[in-house]
Length: 230
Image 1 (tube, rainbow, N blue to C red):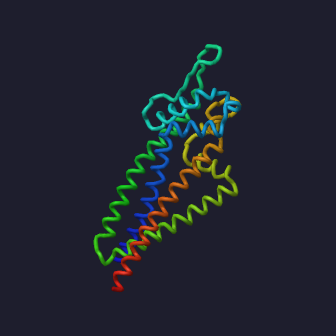
Image 2: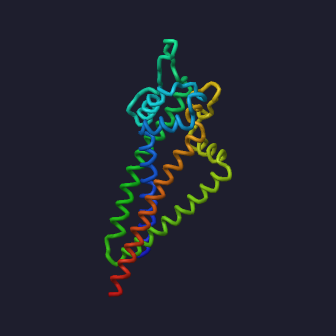
Image 3: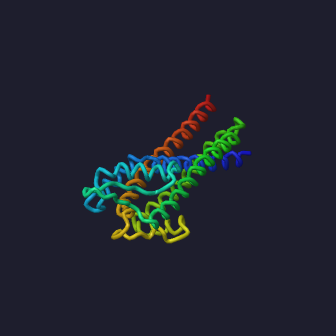
């Protein structure tokens, strides 16, 4: 039972961390204001050709589409000459359809990891005498995740392009993500720096969540040890 409680702690730590990560991804994808702000910061109008006044609309449209609130990925506006301008071509919309599939899957993973983490916690904490092993398992699980995260961070620091390309080849079954910045507004609005900034933001939030979980497990072990000495 002690080994089972420790294994439950490891599993719970992994599930809860994945829950935080997937929740951050879902909330980021659905935040049109944040997407628009990062587009403007990393891809200003002089580089994209999109008027600054249209960035909020593109951000909200993108967020709505990715989270399933809109059926079509397209944005139109009237330019200075009074002509209607259609922003995205069919192959760009097709790629965003693939992205929406990933975001919708992310939502289900988010719910699944939360439920699994709670189930593992219920199993690991059921017996009072095994709760210390469960808490130690949480710290072990977080250590495993920290090692994986460190490896990914080193890879990103040494060869971000390689990591970026590998992720896309794993995540997508086609080459629709290979867009041309000379002709495709989508890649001009979302350059690598756009994803780096969002990734750093999400990573910081996920790290804070893991640190809070580690602190809670450590505090629990400390209180148990202090109680046992009395």
